[in-house]
Length: 397
Image (tube, rainbow, N blue to C red):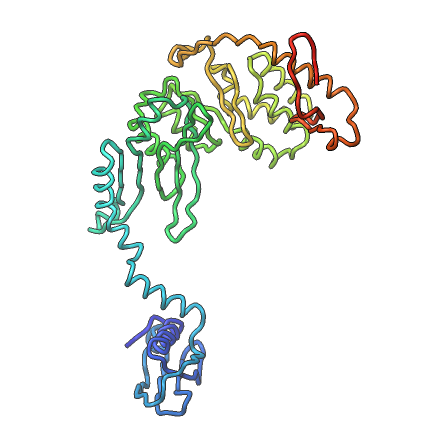
């Protein structure tokens, strides 16, 4: 019996002692040889050394007769050996990741059978197929209910991003997320790929285009980071779509070059500008901060879709991580959104009276014993009595 090297031989002997409950003492251990004897003094002997003709190790002496009692304390076993032993036991009971990948085709067929109309695509490596082997490469999933939800009532916005998979199976997860009228995020589709590059984004967007029937991207706004492969993929697969960038990623790129300071303030002013003149004014103010400001504005004009004025903002939705924009009536895709402003409702007299009451209470001093006389603080920080009776003629407490 031969081993790859001395380290592999040591590992196998440790597994042997753990599986059989033998207590062995390591008499010799160096880069070229190993020698084990029985701790209880019985005649077990195992001598392993490297082969002179190569780097492999092999048995030189082996007398494997054991007449001693099982050892309940085994000094040859460490934590790594125990973990590997039980991982093998669990693998025999539950299966391995290799077995799960071999069942992907059956999993895809079951998804399509239980979810009719869903798009599930699995790609295998062509290099492995040329060697008569099957190796997983990438996978795309978009359920039928998600497609119907996007077409029925979701806003025409799609967020694109990728993240690393940090489990035993490495790779990256590409995700497309939408949003409904209540600002709730709605997963649309996802894909498991090996790397986040231009080719994988093109493949993902091509499948997404077919699943959601996006055509050439008319009336759809994509929000993403400034990943170069993603930018080129959107302009190639969906050339008519609007493409905006996440403010948080723009800010992070600026911090690497210029730090924070005034740029953070101007960045959000630019993001919240609602018409072209305001947008240009904020860029001009940013460029006047210092020389770095001119470089920052130049990069913003080159990378931000908003600066091209193909999309002028009607309103802006922003969170700490998201910034997006809507087409206006000057945009040719405005009719697709079917936007009709609703008239504002008249303010009721009771609302006016309550607002006047809060204003008066905010201007007056707060009593010391507020708890005793029944005062409490409203959402604006003002103290007011716990009961206010509305009167059309005046205010009464």
